[in-house]
Image (tube, rainbow, N blue to C red; front, side, top):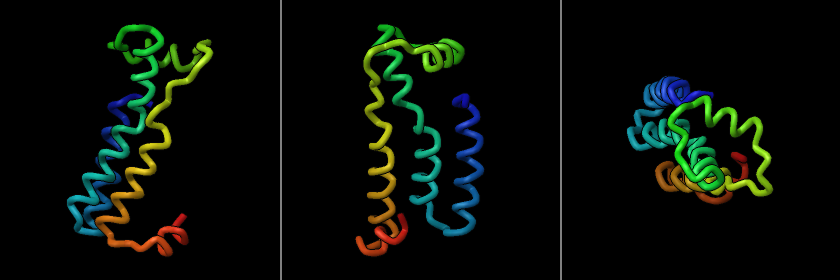
Length: 102
């Protein structure tokens, strides 16, 4: 999905979250988690190709036809840890509640 679509969809979801919870920090976390979800793909392209993908089509072609021996998806699971940590902090959840949520 294009980065602009991530921004638009994340803004809509974050707006709905804001209306439902009235939490600005939670809304910001919701928006950022949707926008920054594919940052690791840009980093992987940069590591393998030694240049930044200025055109989205370059990144798309790279992701579809990547023949590299390694994947550099550093942030793929990290984003879940960050979102979970923020949820625990801002919603003051205890670990037993988090266990039942997921």
